[in-house]
Length: 80
Image (cartoon, rainbow, N blue to C red; front, top):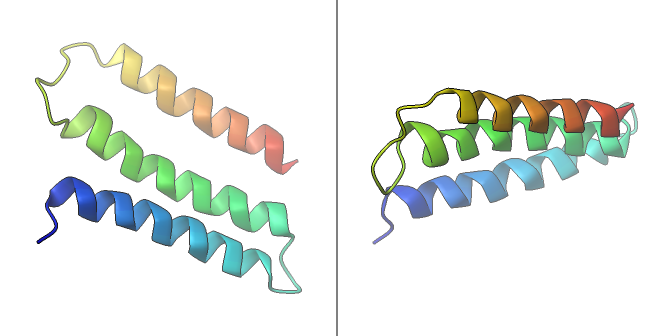
């Protein structure tokens, strides 16, 4: 049976596949579909790395904010 973290990893893969599928639609650019999928996947990644990690959670929220913010900025830059 799959545990919590396996389910989240499958959700990340599903979101990226869904972003690819949306990118194949003629009204949406391919890189825009991938960018939207990666933004949603980032939220799942934030969940398993910072909100509910398999180890002791960090007391510093600055690291989480920097990682998530920089990944969103990178995704935004790649989508333009």
